[in-house]
Length: 378
Image (cartoon, rainbow, N blue to C red; front, side):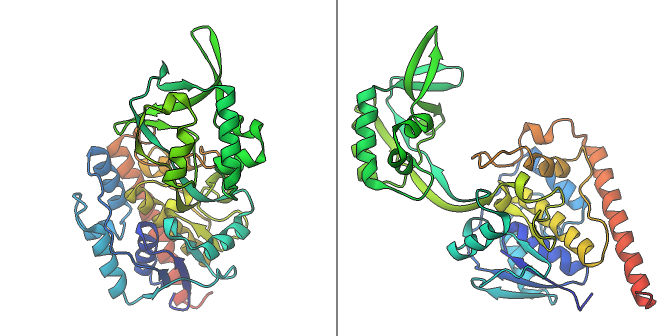
């Protein structure tokens, strides 16, 4: 295995887990990462502990570093990566993806503009997404409630004024400035939608969701400055007395659409040498990222040793996390994290047994492969 080299781009939770897992099987890893000292605070609850136990059943390299309190996991991962003799760490931006070498891409939010363009060229136009909108949040609003949503009726002349204002700020990103520049019909279809409430049709409304922070204005993604957002909000009579808790923004992030870019083994649909993991494929939490990094590592090992690729057993939390990636359509803001749909109907004891058996079978195949190689039959 010493002659086999795997490139991993991104050394966060997914990339770090993949690197440590492959190193454990004797694979040489070239890990490209721009290290950030920021330590995510992992929420520890009963569901998190259940997922942690499943990862332990898989012999997760990262989970071996901590207990289920998950204290300092990111820092301990980094220390392990730096001291692992099978891992060569390159601290900096990568120049270009090698399409002919086994590679795991797990860059997440830190993807550079140039590298994003390479990812987009691999997965195809319309399957990669560069920006994540942060919607404006308000207080002191007089809204109409229906089910879990709140609506603010808007006048036609206000929409026209807003469009004329926004046309001065044309943008290439998917935001209200671009929609306004393309025409009033697109702007209306995206932001000012009709709604049927109490037997009446409200022809144009702004839509809100209520959170602990306030009322979040939906579908209102913008790159406008705070001052220009303030001028825009003043156009709408229903917002004049409202308090802005948070202005909108477009956070630079990178996502690909899992269903159209990878298969259930996390392998690129366009190049068998490439695998994707972590936030890049819309996984939200840190432990969920470990799940994807571990599976990508196992399948890269299968690829370079000529075996059939694998997926996690069904009716496990790990298996459900992967399966649910393929229920996302396009670039919805909700990411795959530990929710009721992921945990539901998973028996904890049975899941642990399945995952232990899965890993035992995998390791047995690796041992048999190594035995054959030692006998010089390959």
